[in-house]
Length: 309
Image (cartoon, rainbow, N blue to C red):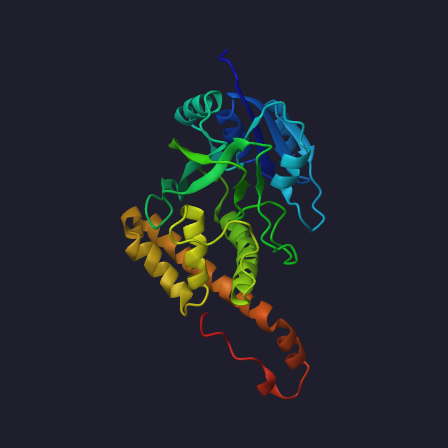
């Protein structure tokens, strides 16, 4: 048997029996695997234990921290390095070779991994989905996910999805890709993005209110990829017709049409996602007025729709 790589893997999970077998198979070279589970009702726990993972239950109380930061704070890792992997992600052999070299002879405190996102059975290479850098490999004492002050919004889930890791130290980039392949059907994609749009609406609301995103990673046009996204989002949130713009950016300017039918469907769904965010932002901005107006005989009291929807 090949020598295990001295890294501890943290996998957040809930009802992931469809994805866990392939995910855990791809992690066979890791010295240690923790599955942080949120009371799964399917066979997730059984599958994780069968593959030798340690299952720890997480009970979200509706406030910070969420699942990954809780795991980073409380799990008894026996390795200095931690690798964060979602259930619908795979670590191919070439990336494992690079991870092994990186942690045995580290030049940085953490490393960004690039994801290939698969949708409807194919790699979405265009439309702005690649490269897709995520800081997933780091010394666990040196990194934590930022808090973007969105916990008061319900139905966003108990896991950090859009939050980024803040590192105490320099970070590098690995060359080999990880794969994002969700074996669940389109219902789950739509359900997941319905929850994500709750979160995004609160971030938009914070930006429009002058509160910023609340995190510790600043906005900088000339910074790293995350800082550039933060800078552009501050502009984006004030633009009109965002659903139409989102489709045009993904399908035309970022060449999503080169991904064929899957690229078109993906761009349409992103446009729909942007519309959901806009509707929920409108609800956040005017929810109190809407409830008050609903009980008022004067229908003119209703606020007017946001032109940005």
